[in-house]
Image (cartoon, rainbow, N blue to C red; front, side, top):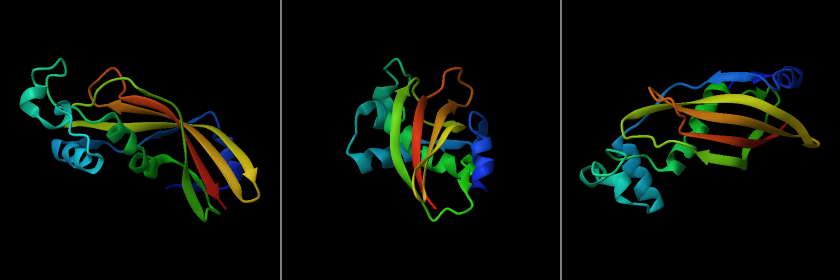
Length: 151
């Protein structure tokens, strides 16, 4: 992840940090996620049956799309140059807006909303993230993501 001083991070509040690289959401990834979560609903893992639905084929689990935020963040989220550890602090207002079809590519757009001192050596960062689906008008999801940085 890119690093910056605390002053530079505070100066980025309210600004777009950019977009991550594209990530392909292929059927093998969807199947592996289904195995990891024991969610084998046919719309995710059975291409023949899924073709008969309004989706026209298999789609990624919403939680799979959400789980890719960690990989996307590595490209654009800015951490203080004094970071010892960063941990996921949670999510607010997650909305799944459009299905991600098998074989589609997604990327995350990150905006830094806030950087709040939680206590000595603790910085809470809040980002708004929108996950774009390549070639689609509607995003896959939006979320407010919280990360606790230990400095």
